[in-house]
Length: 352
Image 1: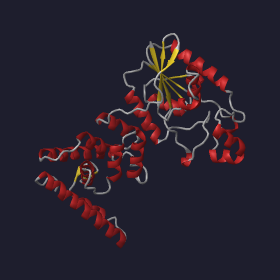
Image 2 (image 1 turned 30 degrees about the vertical axis):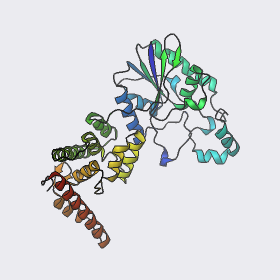
Image 3 (image 1 turned 120 degrees about the vertical axis):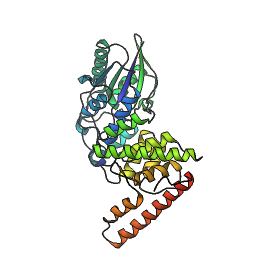
Image 4 (image 1 turned 135 degrees about the vertical axis):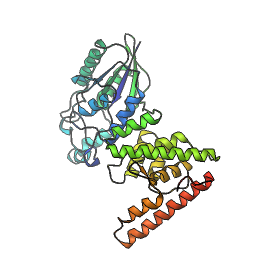
C-alpha cells in the first residue's frame, strides 16, 4: 500500500494583506507561508520518496521545503478563476454583487469564465496517475485548495465539500492499493521545536547572519540562567526557554517584530512560545520562562554579552526628547527589578 500526502501550499504574500481570488494568478509565498513550508519539511522528513508540485510558485516553493528536487506537473495547477482571477474580493463584491452573495451560500456556483470543475478534476487525475507511475513508495503532492478539494471529493463522494477544506500548509492523507481511500484530513505540521527546528525556522524567515547569531547567543545565556534557577530549586521549562529565545527575533525584519513574531507562532500552533516572544521587549516577572528570555535578550548586544548598565547607557543615547528619556528610565527600572528577582531566586548574582 502506498500513501499520498496531498498538501495545500503555504500562505501567499497577499498584496497589502488584502485577500485576492487566487486561481492561476502568480503570487509567491509570504513570510508565514515560508515558515509553514519549513514545518512541513520537518514533519514529513523521512516519510516520502518523491515530491510533485503545481507549476505555480507558491506551490513549487512549498514543495522545495520538502525535497531539493521536485517534479513539476502542469495538471496540478489551481483551477482558473476566469474573470475573477487575481482580483481582490472587495473588487469582486462591487462588480458582481449578486453572484458574490450567491457564492457565499453555494461555492459550487461557477465564476464567470472560470475553468469547468470537471475539466480541472480530469487534468488533476491525469497528473496524479503520472506521479504514481513515475515514483515508488509514499509521495507528496503540493497543489491548491480548489483542485485538492475536487480530487478528495472524487475519492470520497459522500463527504460534504466543506469537510474537504484544507488550511494553508496542511495536508490530507490518501491510501492507494489499486484504488484510492481517504484517510486523515487537513493535518497541520506540529514538529517539536527543538534547536534544529528553530534554526530552520530562522533560516526560512530570511534573517541575516547577525540576527541569527544574536538569537543563538540569547538562547545560550537563557539556558545558563535556567540551569542556575533549577540548581536553586526553581523549576523552568528548558525546552520552552531555548525555543522561545531562539525565535524571539524571528520577525526582526518587520515593524513591531515582537507582536508579529508572536502572531506567526500562534498561527503555526505554538502558543507558549508566542506568549514569550510577545513579551520579550518588556520585563515580565511571570511566567518564569518569559522572564528569563526577556532578561537574556537585554544582556546580549549583537552576539556579545553585556550588563544592563552598558545596554541601557547605549540605548539612552537614542532618546531625542524628555518623553523618550522618561520611557527609557521606566524600562531600565523594570529590567533592573527583573535582574534582582532572578538573582534572588538563584541565591547569588548570575546576572550582573
